[in-house]
Image 1: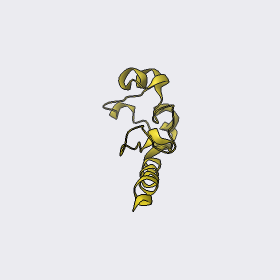
Image 2: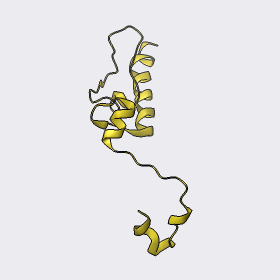
Image 3: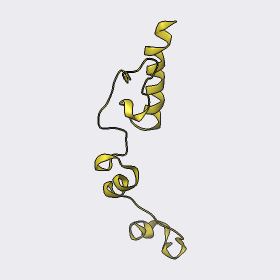
Length: 86
């Protein structure tokens, strides 16, 4: 990566203190996520139902991706499971 940006910003490789990267293999090794998936469970539960009363799944395991997806998931589950009962 340093060689790709060096023509633009100059050679900064001697200033790098620490560098890290990950692969699907390392993600699976350290998180236990099958195949190195970084966005939740491969099984999506679109309605959030977990089979227990008052337990609802929200977040990236619910079907949306990223930070905004996790937020939208929470809003969707509140609308479906809480506000609909008020």
